[in-house]
Image (cartoon, rainbow, N blue to C red; front, side, top):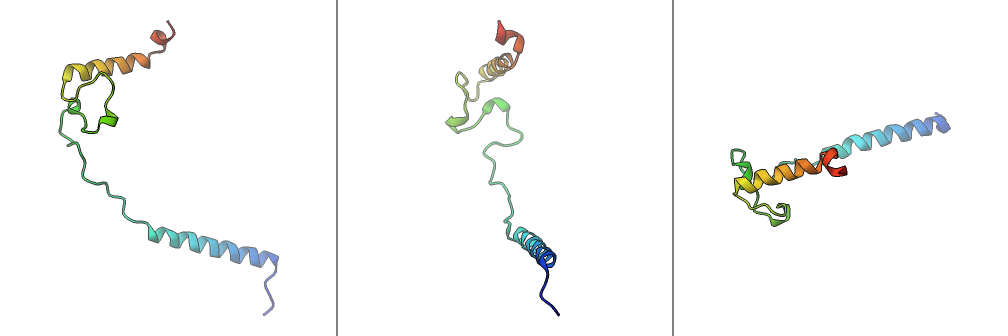
Length: 84
């Protein structure tokens, strides 16, 4: 059998690359989330314990301040009130 031609080498390289790509997927670890900090049935205004995720002017556990924060965010997305 003779040595592979240029096209044969390219085809062999493509097959090898595809095989390596397929095998690399076998090394993936399961991506299961850690235990959630907030329960699914908890009230939305209870919020999170992490300070970094709290909006300014909102107190965790206070429904009125949570609703006000939602209204404020909604108004920031209203183009009509933003341009006035």
